[in-house]
Length: 140
Image (tube, rainbow, N blue to C red):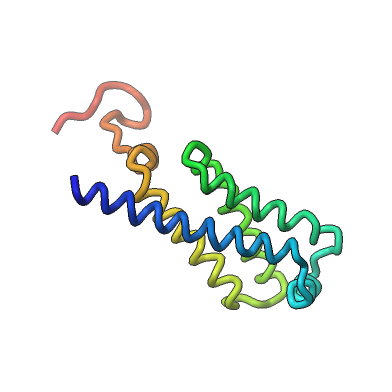
């Protein structure tokens, strides 16, 4: 029982860390300081996207933070982080710090979610005794 509590605590902590970093990033994006505008210009994002990006970031954080929407939040955040990784790859910054941070956030988020939610582990890693074609279960 103690290991289950520890798993949930570590999982919630990891997810909470990702949520906190997404919230901080979204708020900085909304404030649009000069370094953020310069970074978006460097990547080649259109000026209109500067208004949408903080909303997307904060939406990912909010859906990930709520237990009832954490799974859809993880899927949304995975797509969001994957888009950031692909943008940096497109401009030739493969292996850059922003890419590494995005990959680390994604790994931390999914690791935390799988530790926090045993039902999700069972759903994703279910071992079914029935053959894929249907029919009778295998016997040993």
